Length: 114
Image 1 (cartoon, rainbow, N blue to C red):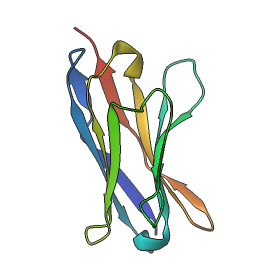
Image 2 (tube, rainbow, N blue to C red):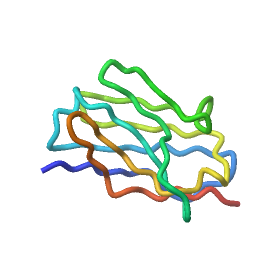
Image 3 (tube, one colour):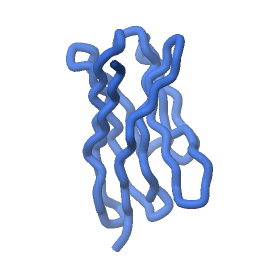
Image 4 (spheres, one colour):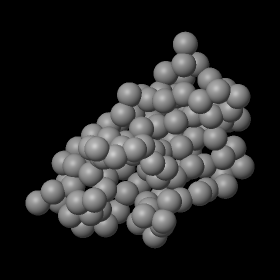
């Protein structure tokens, strides 16, 4: 059974930082492209960042320079370090694993507000 469990979300003030984690099980983590996506109320789910098995990273324009995606294959975990957070970053953040199939986590809420 595949499980992706996100953690690290919460309420943060504008300009603050959060580090999201996603622990994976039931997949061969090292061959999966891992990603973070987000969905704000009333909007479609959108890409934030992905990291492939060779550590090649892709970022949405909104994330470049502020967010960093990384992975620890020994711990089957992918991270998203988010700095300089803005109110428009408020969304549910989802972890994704993709190889032959795509799997999703249940999501973690990030709220940026003063």
